[in-house]
Length: 349
Image (cartoon, rainbow, N blue to C red):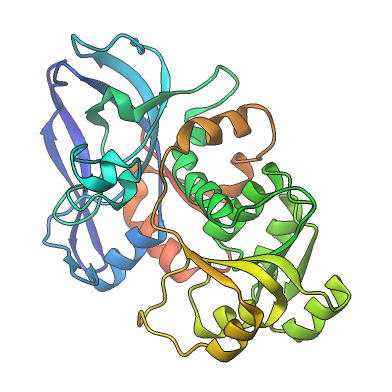
């Protein structure tokens, strides 16, 4: 397929623009995908606001976006499982396949990963992308490419649930009702967890949590989280906690509200990267801390959960912006976090 495509680029902190680039040509083991929806992730917003995340520094012009869904328009010579017209969700990280982590199946820990929108690798706020066929997952007929774009954050939620050994009969708590907190809540429910409560300080986000299936919510701005946890669990403590807010306060609350011998899964990234934690209490309770870095081997199960109606993924997307409105999409996502739970950019029909 020849021609050019429109690409949205970050030209500086808080500054978006557009450029034109050639439509990529897929190699033998790649497919060319016409992108239809791309989610705006917290990392996109952080790069947009700060120009960096840790050692990853944006050098403009830079393309953001790593949560894509679209339709296959061309396939490489060695691609047999996909054809033009197939709807797909794209897993955004290409790993080396050779290191110890890749060989062990823990490919999300590969040091040589090439991941969309992680400097210096461009993302996919653009009209087309060529991507390895092995990382393009066909969507069932009853799923849309909007849902395909949201499989990426849902994969994080399922990985968190797996890391915490989520199972039937548990009563769990999720700290944070942003996108990752909400998909973690839905992943826990899909894994059979009996009761899932969500903690946040933003009432609109807590309302969204209830809409999407939370058993109950705790508004930490209006009530004492520890007292609420005692009431809910009748003094026993939660069986599992997933922390997605990335704050010292919520991480210590997680230690406080879980029962002895339980798991705490840390997902959220704090701004400083450092915390003072109640380690003596954690030791007394013999809790197990697990952490999450992206995901591995999750896309098929996440797609199946959505297709079977176990996860209402469309309900996450509170705002959809046109591709021509990329500046407003980024600005409002950054400045109106209470109103916008999850924004998605509509690239094309």
